[in-house]
Image 1 (tube, rainbow, N blue to C red):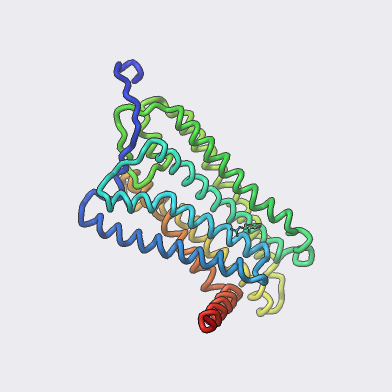
Image 2 (spheres, protein in one colour):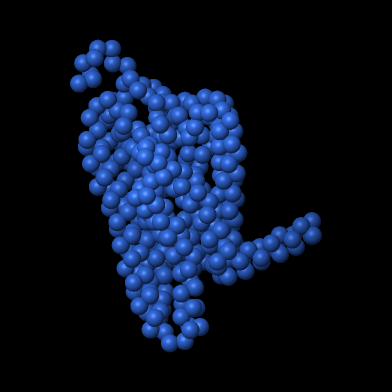
Length: 317
Ligand SMILES: *[C@@H]1O[C@H](CO)[C@@H](O)[C@H](O)[C@H]1NC(C)=O
């Protein structure tokens, strides 16, 4: 319909409106997001470093955690630096290619977070409900498969959405009501029919959330059933404490989804999308390292060892 409007100008760049257009708020947003971004990068890098350097932590649970930390760093790196740069340079532009690249990677890392939480729940299920066969089930090839599959699947999902969005025609309106090129606000801009994109977005989105969630639910039902069978209080606590951190992250992640989309703070759907995106790409990636390192004895121990070691090297030099 819009094709026949004559001078069909294809858009070569988009405008990212950001979180706010008021100048005083921009400064505040800059400081807050820069701080959160630095905490995310430092905290998660520390987790990867601690796990990488301590052989005692080279178990499936911690290797999956290192993968989650890597996905968290990448997830906030897709959107936050560009947003900070735009605030600082007082420019709102992003190129067409930049926009699609940003969309591709933001989908990859949110999807992978979902899958990794499912894989981590399965790992705890095997550890608690089948402790004797744990090492034979979670051998290194299978663990590698459990990390490669989420990476592969999330890239397929992102590629599907990106290629489908690339079929759309963007003509008059190039203003994205968001702080990065997210799929939903981009689809709204298109002047061609985005019905197929929306159907695919709905089906893929639903399955990407449902399958890991079902795996988590199944794992924890079995875990709770088995833990309740343990007679000593101390044994119960010991079994359950290994999944406390994971359970906290799961509650944080799905609690956020439910909170944002079922009890929205604002009546504007755009605001809900923005709040959701801030929570998923900035806040939860920042909190994951704290949850894991504050609640976990082994992580704390390995961290102290690392500090002592670096102290030693500093004294030597
Ligand atoms: C992710 O997990 C795999 C296998 O489970 C492991 O070999 C790899 O080192 C992990 N990646 C990171 C960044 O730790």
